[in-house]
Amino acid sequence: MALLQIAEPGQSQAPHQHKLAIGIDLGTTHSLVATMQSGLPRVLPAEDGSFLLPSVVRYLADGAVVVGEAARQAAASDALNTLVSVKRFMGRGLEAAHQLGDQLPYELVMHDNGMPYFNTIAGLKSPVEASAEILNVLRVRAEAALGGDITGAVITVPAYFDEAQRQATKDAATLAGLKVLRLLNEPTAAAVAYGLDQQHEGIHAIYDLGGGTFDISILRLHQGVFEVLATGGDSALGGDDFDHAIASWIMAGAGIVNPDAEIQRRLLQTSRRVKEALSARDSVPLSLAAGTGGAPADWQATLTREHFESLIAARVDDTLKACRRALRDAGLKPADLSEVVLVGGSTRVPLVRRRVAEFFGKPALDHLDPDQVVAVGAAVQANILVGNKPDSDLLLLDVIPLSLGLETYGGLVEKVVPRNTTIPVARAQEFTTFKDGQTAMSLHVLQGEREMVSDCRSLARFELQGIPPMVAGAARIRVLFQVDADGLLSVSAEETTSGVRAEIVVKPSWGLQDDDILRLLRESQAAAVQDMQARALAEARAEAERLWIATEAALAQQGELLSASELAELQAAVQGLKALAIADDAAAITAAAEALNHASETFAARRMDAGIRQAFTGKTLTDFEEH
Image 1 (tube, helix red, strand yellow):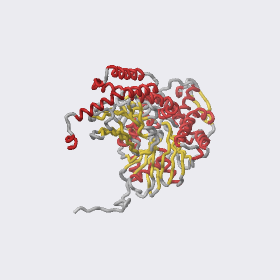
Image 2 (cartoon, rainbow, N blue to C red; image 1 turned 90 degrees about the horizontal axis):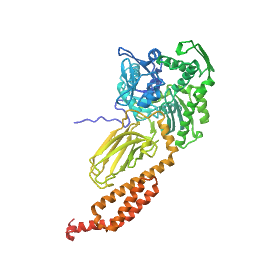
Image 3 (cartoon, rainbow, N blue to C red; image 1 turned 180 degrees about the horizontal axis):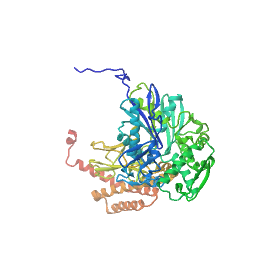
Image 4 (cartoon, one colour; image 1 turned 120 degrees about the vertical axis):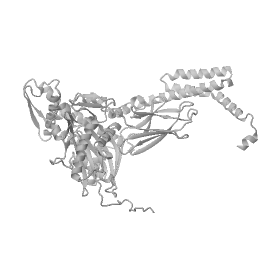
């Protein structure tokens, strides 16, 4: 006899068993790990008591790997083998090498999979491998602090990380021996931390400026439900850019030209210290002796906070432009917000705080450590996902940043999942065949806001084979898009009458180019009228081609039903439509298609009569009654 173990709904069968779960903020500059202890979130320190783990990885000739502060201290003297800001390369391809290669002192090698690898003394290393080393240190730190194996982890990512960047993060966690419970958007994690801390309800803006990424999210908090109304940002904008601005100023003033890798790294380290000092001081003196740092002569100067702010003002303005777009997407004005939350170490820069307060018309909340708040929120969510808090009412509703769709005939994009749709989500749409007897369909998955395929980003291609041969338009192809809670996409296609099916999990080998998402959104707005005209033209051409193909096929089969003059008239209408289809006048093409339809009405009626006569030939009334 089988025995059933019974527990009350929502209750653990073994309430005393507390699963060990962690939240990880995998940052560009620093990374942290946190957990829930005695009902409160706690950031876990290293043995030396420090909470922040520098996101720096150094590879040595003997195969050893150094992660953290020791690696950062060696960054200048061993620049080629010490990887800093590796998050900027995660899930990105050749464009990352082009954009960042001149700024960062690495030897980049493009791999066969399309991703840039770092050429180190220990061999080629991918951004995923380097990130895995950082995650592994955090895992070991957590296991030592908690005294056991980790059940699972919530890892945060920028809201604007695309499919490839999210997948690369999951791959890094797998290499580090971590089970990913969920990838959580960084602004949402911050909202969790502040929401639980303040118990505020209303609409909030989360302004998250880290070392290498920027996110703005507009969230509504109501009765424990965090709903993301809109999101925006830039996956290649952050405090690193402030460092580069100072470094460029030093190089220009000191006459440094074509610095080698070691000098570049020293300049960036100096710039970071100057940036941090200017958050508390009005000016910082600098000096370089001849030959030091590549300076051809002795150089002294003072960088004032005012001058520093002028150097970075354009980048701060870029963040506010993203804020303006996010508010517009949410249909809100700054006055509609209950509060603004600052997240990320780069929000300590006074100019950032002033401009954010001016833009939103209110001072921002910053009483939680901006470096720790994301990890805290991730820990809260991890604790819920492993079942340690089954009575929690907390629900997180994130959104996708860009529309997802399919290519249709004529180079058009049919959007299936619009941008800012809450995830997880499943959306299905029916498509059909274009030609008679079509037995296969090529599906092209795209991401973007424009109407034409050429203006959107290709995510994946796959084929549905084995479609039963039917007349054009008879097949019913149901295409299902599914985006999970981590923002990862899978697409399936099924011919509903036969049940043949194909599917693909979208795992592109690299991510969007720098500023691609913002560019796509801007272009979709600026070119809205042009796009609609292009779509109308493409649709008219596609419909015209379908019509003349069908007409020519019918004439080939039953052209004898027409007199010579009738046949000539119909063929002339077909040729007229073909001639107009290459022009750029959608209205003229549509008019010609209507003319062909009108000209073929007599032919269509005769074909129908002929079909009926053939069906009745040799049959009696009794034959039909039996059926």
